[in-house]
Image (cartoon, each protein chain N blue to C red):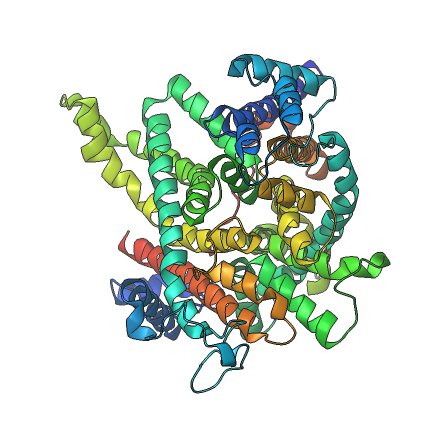
Length: 331
Length: 290
């Protein structure tokens, strides 16, 4: 179908456009504004760069030339797969990012599972628990987890499970066990928006006429819930996937710092600490690409998951997507 | 659905409550939140009313002593009173959040009004800018800005503010679009009211409500963000007390002196919950008065 193909092409171009614009904007903020990190690094009186090395950096980034030339050179290098070199350690940014990415993606995946389990449990309890107090309590969970900074959650988990109970070591990464606490922390941190959207979706789906029809046909409550309401009500939560993935990567900065894990988050934290612009730029590029990619895939997969919706029906794809739910959203 | 401390009003009984009084009745949760906010205001304006001691004065012999009558929340590794430090840190923490919200509100209002009112290519450009801002998570975006601006409490606040521009701008834009299409705006235009006058007298006052009610929410979110940045060491500088920084300082004593972490942590959570509760109350009032 040509119209469908054109829609997909438009969406791909749009996503690429957002990534490119994000890269340019970040570049301008990092390098073109006065006080850019390279100059800061070179002029830092406390930690002087040897003149020969400074000349190398200036030559590599073409700092003696206008911003536009610098940008063109950087983009040219990017297209050839060269992300530049760390200002702090002189190592290749690409290597650093790839090195950290594996462990962080694993953490993010585990945290995503945690978040999904929390959201499903709390969501079902908040809408279908037979006791009013339980429903009420479950509805407080998203606000409470949003109000608790993830470093607090992480530190308390450490305090209880590492120091008090001694179940996992707080110092070394030892095999698969050591991912549990960080994944729990990160999962709790990203869960509230998913939970809120799921509660909304389930409430809406359970009030739809088809539920009454199914009940009148004699289906049990459990079957209605499991086979019909959950499937209908959880679709809106799926559109949050891109936001969640981006939040997971950003959240890893704090979680990896709390649990002393070497990953992309740790690399980012160190880069911000030493004002290492090229690394920060690369991380933004990565997160923005991931976000746009997941967004694109969920948008294009939507008709497969929910056959009632056709691709071309939602031209820009944004009409369906719920906003990132706020701290304490009332309906 | 109300996900705050407020007893969630079931949808069915809401119209009944609306009929009874113009303002919704205040529950125990509302009173608690109001009390917390009152205490916070006092701590910001006159911290010495709540804690007379000097937040920076260290008592050598009393380092890391647990909660007692002399030191309600114990002392830190230098013998400084934790309660005093939390009270005196309120101004920095909440002040930074206020700066963040002000930056976000100003930027968001400007962008939203421009885009919603002017339409056309301005709208297209601003909408793309919002897309870009939303494609980078807030924490990462604020770290990018901190790399450009440098460390410090004010810079962290500005960074968080810039990161929250997108949410303010989006709400403003959609409100301005709705109001602009209303019949009274059309009437004003037919009567020959100049564009800027229509904007200031008719569109802005009617569009600003939902944007304003976003403030408590963003305020709470900013507290969490700024404390996270301070925790990482990108915000306030020691020995100045700031909530996130207090948690970071207490981190090494997690095992021996957990109160160093518990106390400021609990204060952050309670403050943000109160702010988000205020959000719920504002929403209820808006709905009943609408």
